[in-house]
Length: 396
Image (cartoon, rainbow, N blue to C red; front, top):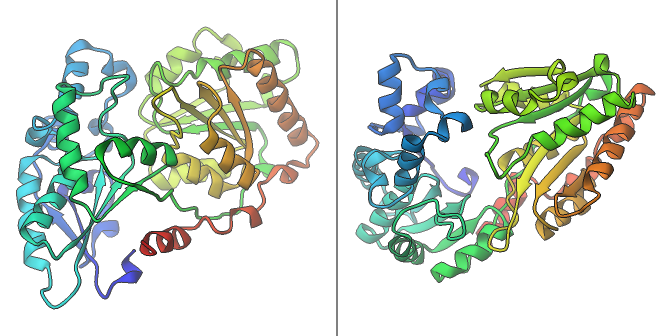
């Protein structure tokens, strides 16, 4: 969006130093805002600035105290105290932004969810400077009624209704998110993640490599499905375990390992990397014979498109997706448009058989030395870049 304006500034938490190196944030256009939130406190308690300390893996999240705090952290106004961003960030970001607004120009502020602190800052700016254009980008649904992620559900819905109706444009990251946001009295514009098209490297692999990068949400995602299917293929001698590598990179290594433990053949094929840099994750995706994706849906929620789907698309290796739920129109539309892989639904009684057959086909193609034939077409990804998507936003 910066190309659409004479000048642009990125206001971000001082916690960014725990995720990026100094070279990546050393810019006059990046304004660091003092922050005291749970991430700051965790970092101080651990006395180091490693991003390993700023995430809870799914195993730790099952502790009753942690689950209570996570839910409280999603609940306004409690989340404004030590939730991501926190009160100090909200106050200081508001002051710095107001100071930087130019009276002689059309000013636009773009805020994201998550965290709620960003949206609060945008709301305050809009009240104090009504001439400022406000765009809210919603990657998630703030309140999930069917699977309560907050306390005081009625109050939360009233708060979010008031916040979002103040914005000029509300963006949903998927059609599913946009449709759900209608309950807050807004017509959200869908603006999916953009794609950076790359050249895959997986045809050169000495081992057939399956990669999953990111978080594994307990009860919503089921890594056991992949492990069960691979174990069966190894037992049936359709896949040689000596030729198989399963790479996981993310915060949920403990959960991933525990899910694989009952499958002895699969367990010895695991390559668990833990937390890696974003650049390393992208490199893993480029070298994957299968980029594995898990998602879910229900009667209230569909189109749960994680950010890594669009990274997977850019990597152009086959994507194998297992949806814990029923047919998802948004997934179907993307996979049909891009011809990027296959989707399997847990609601289909025969999905595990179909999944095993598809993995076997890709494995045999790799064995034949012709895996480059499985690369996704670059032409089909045209028109899904960030530049193209942003232009859709500015037509409104």
